[in-house]
Length: 429
Image 1 (cartoon, helix red, strand yellow):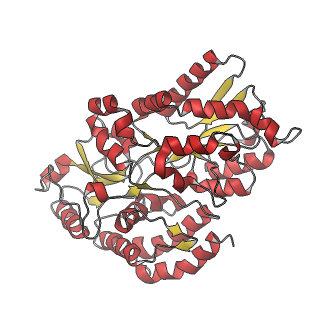
Image 2 (tube, rainbow, N blue to C red):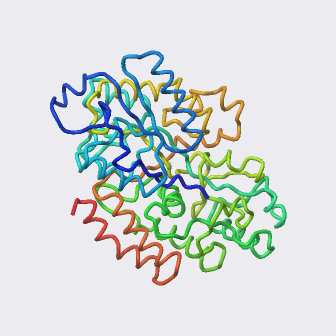
Image 3 (cartoon, one colour):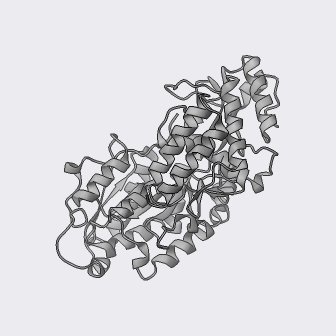
């Protein structure tokens, strides 16, 4: 299943050496903030996002022929964290990357690779007015914004209506709200042989995989807490242990698989459910008759009270950029109400704007399948913006995999055992 797992950026030799793409040399940051001229930007290689990016760039270039934007796709390769980090070191990162993972921001910031958007006169106000209260989650520990919250894909439970009906379950009213309901439904799906597995999150050990099993349910169970808060790990709380215990039961009872799956288990019918965001709707079109519900909690919560993981991708400005005045203007243009509307129309992903549903009522009237995701977008939790973020997530994933997925240790004890290391990492150690 597609996971938008940080498509890699170009190898360093391919990074554009335009006015925005070369580092070092002359001029102060203040001068760069005012400088205008040609810039380069990088886009995700998602086909729908590429189409959006091309029209955005064309619109800008038509109106600003003296400040040309050149856009290129991010080729597939190793993780973008590694290659962007290397590009920062080499001084040849582009001005803007429209695919910056929030988890990587603290590392890029530590490298000196990012420009604080607050350095522009209207930077702080633009970020906060566009995104509303959710913007607070994207602040760095120094209180500044080194990323603009751009778009998210609120994670929910998709279910196959035909598979549910085959198992004798009501596809109009799936019993998936509480852990007990979810487990009972899962057992019925498997025992009836309607599907081999109830749900099939990736059991592999990449740091980001916990964003699509543990973390959405942790956000829901805690009413919106992050994995780390105030520099302290939160996952070994009573709520965190309930989430881990729920997933452990799914694996222990063979309702979820410990084997890596090649392909899309939901589309293939191997799994009756998937835990994913609205980007997948176009993938499922014509292949799965699906429904979607909020992720479960131990006692059950209404949709209006349920939080989930955001699965956001953001825009950051990189410090190799010389013509930052143009880059800032392009960033605002690309995230304007008009361009966000085109992004929504073309990709089905939710712009990280306050009241998405109220901002684009015509879109959601014509595309009702997306409305519940717009509602869910108001209650999303981001990865914590803390030092050593990726290492923290890898530490957590190692612990989770060993205990929850493979049952080699008691999940509660395993979570307790990881707290001290995560606290040290969050403190910058």
